[in-house]
Length: 608
Image 1 (cartoon, rainbow, N blue to C red):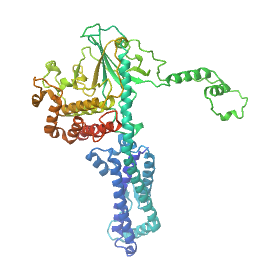
Image 2 (image 1 turned 45 degrees about the horizontal axis):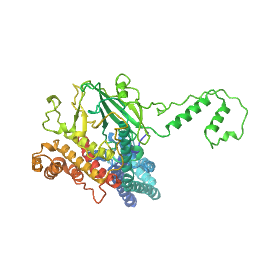
Image 3 (image 1 turned 180 degrees about the vertical axis):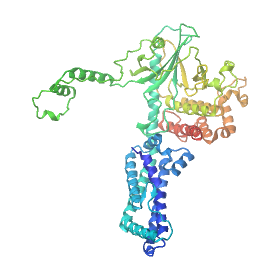
Image 4 (image 1 turned 90 degrees about the vertical axis):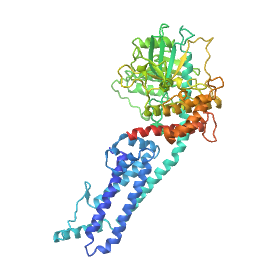
């Protein structure tokens, strides 16, 4: 079935064809004696079609502008309306996102317009993109007779009333498209403001709950002095632009978080166990669904028709069955209802007694099975499933921090593991970090502040094309064994604005470092801002970053990166609250930091 985008391309391609055909007829009819009587009306009709073509092209550009980031791609679409770019399924998907509520209205209007163009082509004798009559300009009697015939035919099929009806139809459809696009564009910013802050807040709330569940889940006897349990939460952009709710693109759904665990085995630092899980928040009504469906399938097995009716009556209060008005004593064959295939729920999962033992068990040959679930402080169930596809880890696998990747010389790094980030990789990580702050603000995963020391990457196995898996950054946290007497559970309530400011400034410094691919500690100007004792103090990094940004960032990263760093460093988001709990501030950070950085990354794809 032809898509809405392809239909727009067909209409766009039809306009030049119609105008060319009309001009061809005009030139062919010039020698005819009666032409002057019809000429003014015919030329005026050509001008009307030309204006409608221009309006449609502008409407189409307005439609595509929010979903096409490259001038080259836009030019390819508008200049080649029958080209392969119009058949790209991603373009149709983006169009539906662009018109979340008015897509069907758009489809109806563009199909009406395409139908009108098809009628015009039929009237002008255009078939398969070609004009059936061609004036050979020989002046022969045969050609003159054909020309006279075509003139009378065109004069009939494009009589005044017929022309006016076609013009009204084209004008009405063009105007309707303009209203649809303008209205959708006007409402887009309001939809974004309503939807985006709450989406980030839901992710943060789930991450907080997961942290508390993990903190009480390590019920083992591992040494307390040196925490042997690490939970590495995978940082994800999660949103490719703010789109309609049903079309929000996520690597995983909002109720799914990926965590990579590593556990130190037998107190030996060189014996580590790695296991990656996908953690989902179970719905509160899962238990009721399982109970009702299992009861229904049990009562319905080997039942006749009356038995099925009785099951529905007892299981669904208030259900009106029209066939109960006239019961008939008819015997039906026995019917067997198979119990429905249910998704795994907390009834089918076992509560994890000790997460340390569960991870070790999963790594011993049962990694394809769910670990079970843990409860958080609000009694919500977090179910632990194996990642799909499950990653394969070498026995010698290691991690490397973002700090180590940025430092020019790190004594702790072996030469074989030295890796220089490309500009595309640095910018991609920058987008993920900016988006992750909005997902994890004021949570124990970020804490009062965060830095490049908290961000870790997996080193790839030997022989891999990339020595570091840059596309999978983790934020790492350590956990000790849980004892009710000594464990301090995290407070996931909203933090004060000072914490938000610190987190934003820390993000600004990391963005600055990623802009250049260098650590702030390696900047010579930093020595100027050390304390009297020659050691860094609370203002050293901020002052260094301010000087570095002000003098060099614009030339290195361009205006978008430069402005994103400025807003984070100085928390410069206008007259808004400086607390990330505030919806307006989160919206501002997304609009003025995440989106511009993401646009910079998309330019690499469009230019490549």
